[in-house]
Image 1: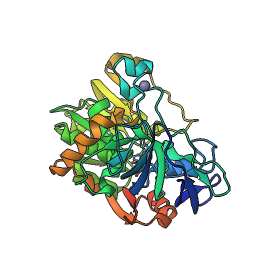
Image 2 (image 1 turned 180 degrees about the horizontal axis):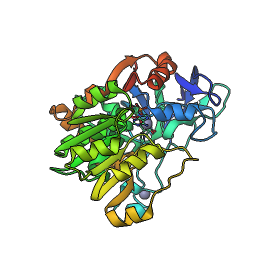
Image 3 (image 1 turned 30 degrees about the vertical axis):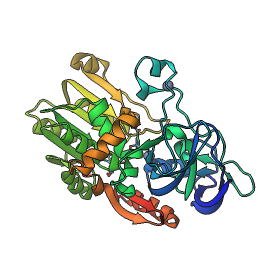
Image 4 (image 1 turned 120 degrees about the horizontal axis):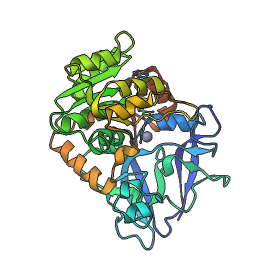
Length: 363
Ligand SMILES: NC(=O)c1ccc[n+]([C@@H]2O[C@H](COP(=O)([O-])OP(=O)(O)OC[C@H]3O[C@@H](n4cnc5c(N)ncnc54)[C@H](O)[C@@H]3O)[C@@H](O)[C@H]2O)c1
Ligand SMILES: [Zn+2]
Ligand SMILES: [Zn+2]
């Protein structure tokens, strides 16, 4: 039976979100219906509501979530009702050319639910990142549910579903940070701080946090920054060089999505160093860099989608590290809020007041 629940809808470009009744169909083949327990508010939800991702309004927002599988379609075997899962936005297909080459984190054919959730009048909804989890229930592809240890509280576990995984993976998977490395992270929001936590977990020796907001720099220390630089008042490239004996950092992670910050990252890396772009730029942004500097320094310029993660490999492992006290995921949760507080949470994000506000549902 289809169910009716409340969901957070962005009806048109740049207008405040509304809480509306939505219809969530019974899961069909390959699908799972999930009862949400918690869902973080990510910058990408705001991008959707501003029309910066695409024009497929109305959107059902929310995508950083954990919940309980409520029911599954006829042929689903990987997950079962009652499973505690983090939702992911890359359910790998196992059959495309990336998957067949053994690089499933690049899967070109990731799955979402086939059936549509709708408003009461039948209008089809576009779920953010194929998830739509600011709702009491949502419909996803079964492969979008990754089982993890239920000992981790949902407001913490859900964060791995997007921004925190993106940052951790930018350091660990894409940047290949290893023991003894020097790492600089430019932009210390939820994603940047997760990159800092990932660099610490991987054994980095020097971790330089760069931001224009001193409050963010204070928080960055909590996640493992050994040096902080306010780039509003201090030259970031010079400060990163100074903290690395004049050489520059082995890995520089840009976690904002701005050409000026990327340029700082480019010039702040050591010879043979790596730049990782995890911040999402806007479509009209351009870069102008001296090609000879890229050639001369060697190394690599990379971008990181979802931290090059493989949910089935990374989510359960990172949750275990959290439960062992080795990964402070709880420190990303600035506030627990209700489902009717999403618009206010966007404002707080804009003001730089929070790392993550997390919607928690009554269970
Ligand atoms: N690649 C991915 O898969 C992925 C996943 C999730 C989010 N993201 C992107 O990562 C970026 C960061 O997300 P977030 O949730 O941490 O955002 P956020 O707004 O919480 O953090 C951005 C930080 O950058 C700082 N900042 C802004 N301008 C700056 C400048 N010129 N120099 C230095 N610091 C500056 C801000 O003070 C803030 O602390 C966004 O672009 C988001 O869309 C990427
Ligand atoms: Zn694939
Ligand atoms: Zn996100």
